[in-house]
Image (cartoon, rainbow, N blue to C red; front, side):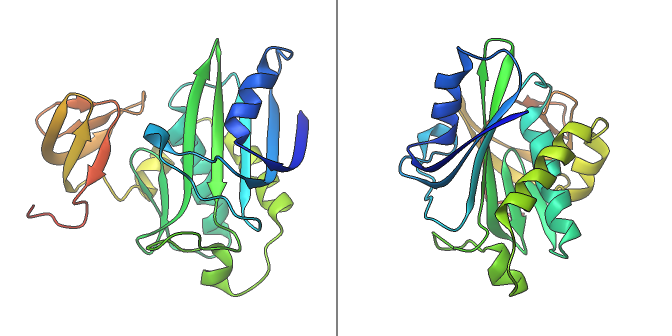
Length: 214
């Protein structure tokens, strides 16, 4: 798999999209710093030097965000961190955000952006690997591990459910069509969140995750 490395770019997802036209196979774009990193709904993803930012262009599209979350969670779990996955795309350690994932479709592929706080904590209410473990972590080795986990993670839904901190919780979800509330019973094979009453949500922002009485 080709890996394109850069010191400073706007966004690894955007650059991967621009490269896609010349490539039919899987590839990776990795950067030491992003000036225009983004999360879901075009939110800014602070991307100072010292953390891990890469995008994987792959043909694996089924529940790609959840599969990527499992890959990140398993790598961090191997390091000894207490990891959980907040639907749909946040990776938490002890309730603090340590990584985020952004998936974007392009033709019959998907570009999956990974942002992992390795050395720096760029925003409040977040954490980093070094902050939690107090030891050096090699970003290259970490990236290789996450890509390998993603590629080998065929039956990932059971693992996703194990790491999920959303399943079994009463939540409020802000969706494009309005607010949905209820008890989360499961997440299906397409990555949709399933409420106890059978409603299914494909995308949205989970809020009041910790306050079950809201």
